[in-house]
Structures are given as structure tokens and as C-alpha cells.
Length: 124
Image 1: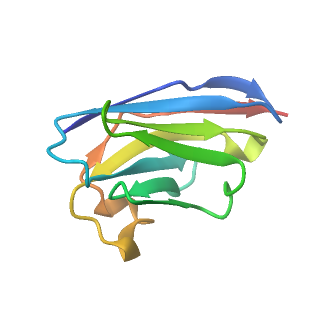
Image 2: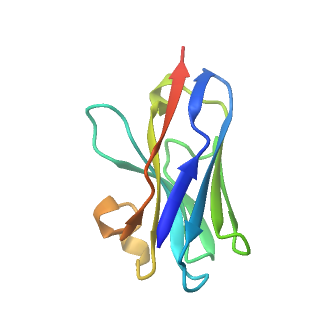
């Protein structure tokens, strides 16, 4: 499985960006796919995921501002980010896994596949 993330950039606070992650090599649609982020000097943190293509979960810090959408036909998962804040500045990574259980979705070490990361910078 290979993941390719795109769409990062520089945006002012209050603005919007859309990230996209394209996956290749997926064997079925039940993969969990989603997004993490890592700010400078901080650990990688959960943003949101499409759990087995059935339900979407978000971190409290982005709930109501970010939206994940998944296209199983294209094997893509997008992250629409609205009302961006300077604290959203980070490298955003897409992740996927075929065997993840619900209690593990927030832990990056439980994911087998990662994209290369795309930088999002929000200026104040």
C-alpha cells in the first residue's frame, strides 16, 4: 500500500485548505484511512479517520471545523479544513491500516501505512 498526500500550503487564520490522500494497493474497502498531524517539537497527533469506511471520527480540537470525505471508487480520503487557526500549523500525514480496532484509532504506532506528509502553515 502506498499513500500520496497533497494540498498543503500557507493560509491565513480563518481560511480553508483541502488535503487529499490517494492510496494505491488497497485490497478492499474496509481499510481505515485518515489523517494525523505533527507540529514542530510535538508528537504526532490524531486528526480524524474513516474507520473501516463505515464511520468517521475526529479529534475534539478539529471537530466542527474539519471534514473527512472518502471516495472508495478512487481510493482517496480528503480532509477539508475550515476556520483554520495558527495552532493547526503542522505537517499532515495520511495513514491507513487494514486491521485497526476502534480503541486504537488515535495511536499512530498502530497504523501500518503512511504518506509522506504535507505542510500546512496558518499565519495569524
